[in-house]
Length: 139
Image (cartoon, rainbow, N blue to C red; front, side, top):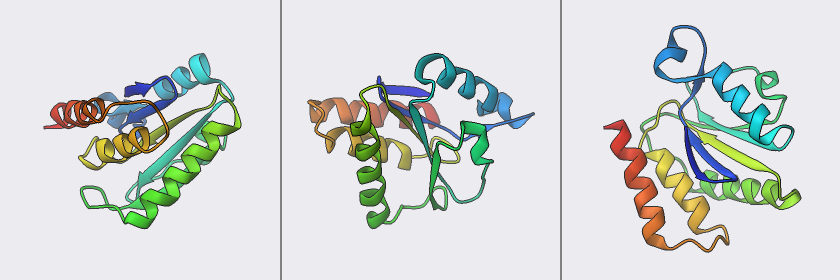
């Protein structure tokens, strides 16, 4: 899990049992949201191959699925970014978490697109660094 900004989180798929040992543990993720963003978070699941019950995150999750390690449709990026911005604008306490099945190259693209295109005062070099950092931890 990587905190891009206080309100923007990028992470791999939240998993349980053995898979939770090498991916993000579902229990750890839920504890994090309860401690830092209780009742003020929305999880964006981009994974087409896996799913979890919406109740795992208090029904505060949405799906924008596409196959992992593939480019996501541009129209999906726009729709998701609009949804992210709308949710964050509803309350200054709100936070979003974006995840794919693994920390593939797609995740830094989406996180950077959100931060750079979202009215945040963030230099492009910071977005490039974020993308590089996430990708370097995958490879």
